[in-house]
Image (cartoon, rainbow, N blue to C red; front, side):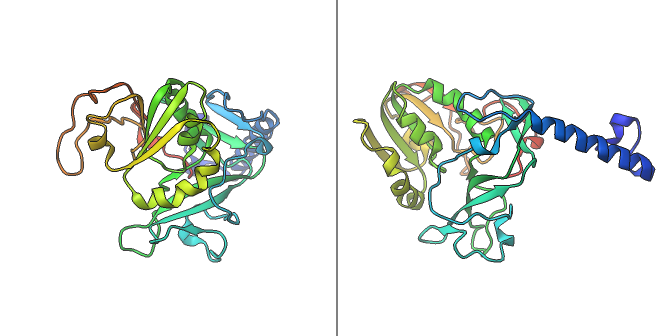
Length: 281
């Protein structure tokens, strides 16, 4: 990966050149870590964002011990590290991202990376792979700076009665509900199990604000066709990039046109992205 920068392919480097390259890489990383800044909800996207570990304090859904494994199937001592949904379909864990490990950092069609000056927790939600005993290596959702930054355009649009389609770890749901310009939130989630399991953990963050909240279990493409609201924030997509609410569904039907009774519709990851947009988690 470094060869083209020096005009050489890596396999053709001499041992001395390899050592020199490694030393330069380590020096660049050391200089970058010195520039670490605190994470805030207003932290802007940068091609190379460096954050202080102490400032990253994501909400926990369940009390678990952290795991050091990115692929949860490799965890040899899972007791106390995983929270499992009642039927065993979903797994919640908090992964430890090592110091200086890079995560993808996306914004629209722009790609960058983010790292921390120390280890941090990354809450993650995994789904079981069909009838298999194994969990899907790619999470259903994980809470990272990229996840929050890519959700912020939708958050800014939230006003009046807002539909949040897709529960995930509940970050967008809670923050949208707590926004001053929002008077009511309707959650649309396809999985009854996820609603029953996750919503009690989020309930303390939704109380005491004097706002209405309700939940509809169903396919957002069907529910929102005639649903009335001011804004719909839709995050029902497995990957970031080229997402469109009105695309061919798994059953071969075509969903076209806008919901008739929702003025503003925002979809997570509507900008085109390549495969390289996927992150460490």
